[in-house]
Amino acid sequence: MNITLPPEQQKWLEAEVTAGRFHSIDDAVAAAVAELMSIHDDDLAWARPYVEQARASVARGDVVSGDEFFKRLKTKLDALRSS
Image (cartoon, rainbow, N blue to C red; front, top):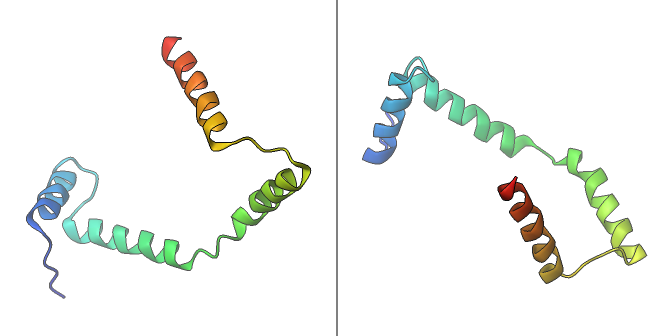
């Protein structure tokens, strides 16, 4: 099989092989395809409990606006950065 990649992708793959992250470009491509296959086959069943928990929170009215969420997130990030 012959695969043609854009030059920037080929250069990146060559650098990954040179850095020792893959034994060859073939190994890197095989790893990428395996990852895509696992993503494609994932039925997201692992997420179901989180979705149900979120739905229950919404039903209880335990929610905040998007603006409030981002305000709280910014406060936390600022605190972490200043530590």
